[in-house]
Image (cartoon, rainbow, N blue to C red; front, side, top):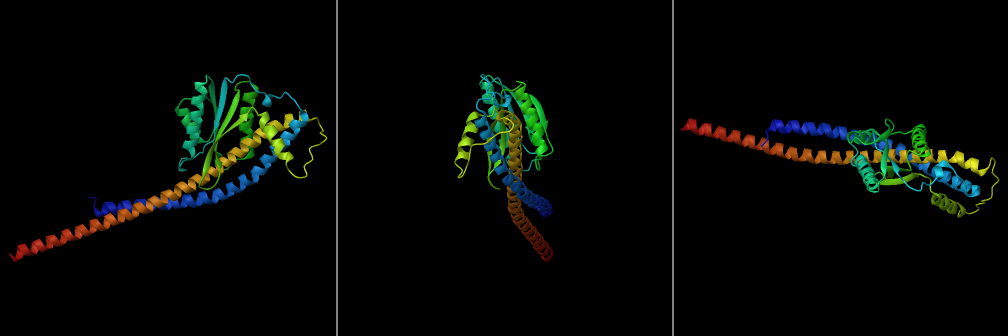
Amino acid sequence: MASTQDLKRRVRSVTNTRKVTKAMELVASARLRRSQLRIEAMRPYADRMLELMSGVSQAAGTVRLPLLAQRETVQRVAIVPMTADRGLAGGFNAQVIRRALTLQREALAGGQEVIWFSTGRKAASTLRFRRLNVAQSWTGFSERPAYSDAQALAHAVSQAYVDGRVDRVLVVYNAFVSALTQKVTVRELLPISQNLLDSAVVAEEDVPGHTPDFIYEPEPEEILARLLPVYVETELYRALLESAASEQGARMTAMRNASKAAGELIDSLTLAMNRARQAEITQEILEVVAGADALSG
């Protein structure tokens, strides 16, 4: 059995750890609120961007644009896992990386080559450790991404698609549902599906008072050519914001669970310490009684 002093040291150590986890929980909670407001403000903008692009696409008819080009055979797939720069967020990073590696296995089984574009230090370190083909990685903005970060990522993957270095782009990230729930989402970013555009047009026409007839200046084809890169940037920015909010929610939940576990451990250690102290006192009493009996004898 551990001594009383050892148990006291362990109680102090766990108590200090609980102070850290409580502080991290409070910080994550405050950051979660800000991230949640940003993603809630971004979602309507992204939806309207898709509807606008769909309307222009319908007006333009059949057009040949690089980002809309459907490749007959997919030989190279780009996978973009979005992780955090830091850990201590439960399974937030692990589930994204696990899903991305599953996509890699599926692509390799289909005879396709996989090229990686990653965000966050956790994805970068994992891919580097596995010695995978990483074309480019970005770090340092997982908790508070800016639109310029999404632009840099969008330019890299779009250029790779236009140049023919990749035939398909998949983004893997945690979509924010609530502070307790984050859903791993796989989104096909490129090529932009015509079915996606058609479904957005149908949704827009269902709006009461919608008037689909417009006069376009310049021509719809030129407008669509300008909108497509902005759409890719918007979708990536939306994914980065979803990932940032999910990261804070996962970290807050993980730190809360850690604080709870630390409290339970402190209770059990305190109970063990009291028992050890009681045993020491009993032993001392027995030694005093034995000494007294020896002297009286």
